[in-house]
Length: 263
Ligand code: SAM
Image (cartoon, rainbow, N blue to C red; front, side, top):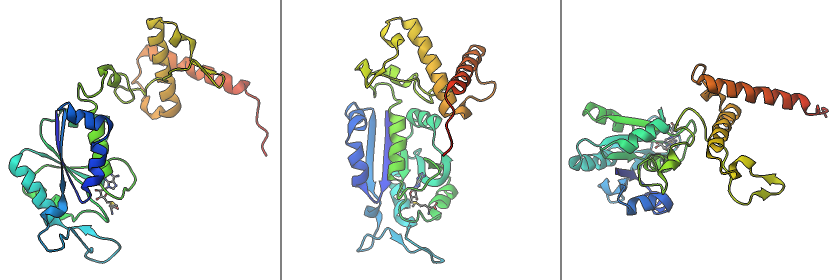
């Protein structure tokens, strides 16, 4: 069971995704519990102001510290050991290991979603000074308009690892990033489509041969798309031999193919 709070200026953006597909099902199954809170409800002035112009000048607006910290205080009053996750392009990068750790964390996860130019730095420093652990997390080296999608990405990637969320527990065992390799190629019906056939071995019913083919396909996919994952020494000897064979076949194919004329 994963328990989360999402603090945001745009609750409907978060709720619309939470009410769809697997995230909605996970909540129905009692495996995910998310409370979405509008940061503005912790602003005290007549206009519910949650952002203001940046000191020092410059473009855009910055989220004020008081409403966010009050929202965090209100969650922590009920859940003192909550893990605060601050979405930020400056944070450590989210990956599958992070998703695994979130899915297994028994503490409440409180996602703070920034917007506009970002969040007043004192949200982070005040929480740290008060002894609260703040996990500043980025979902990649690019800048989103707000932290809502980042929080949803983290929740989605984590919740699907909780046993019982996906129909078939096997789904997460062999997929990309669950081990060192990317997932093998997948096919479904029809057997033939625009002259492209499903590999015969997948139709053979020979489970040993299918397992072998899939392992080789995983290695080939990783070699073609993410060779950085095949770190030196990380491959078992058997896999090194398969990889050498894949590389040799690739070289042979390249030398067979007719040379292109430069235009
Ligand atoms: N001015 C900030 C900067 O240059 O670092 C970017 C602010 S961004 C437009 C607004 C908010 O979106 C951030 O406070 C954060 O909550 C969220 N955000 C943007 N990119 C993100 C990323 N890659 N990962 C996680 N959150 C992100």
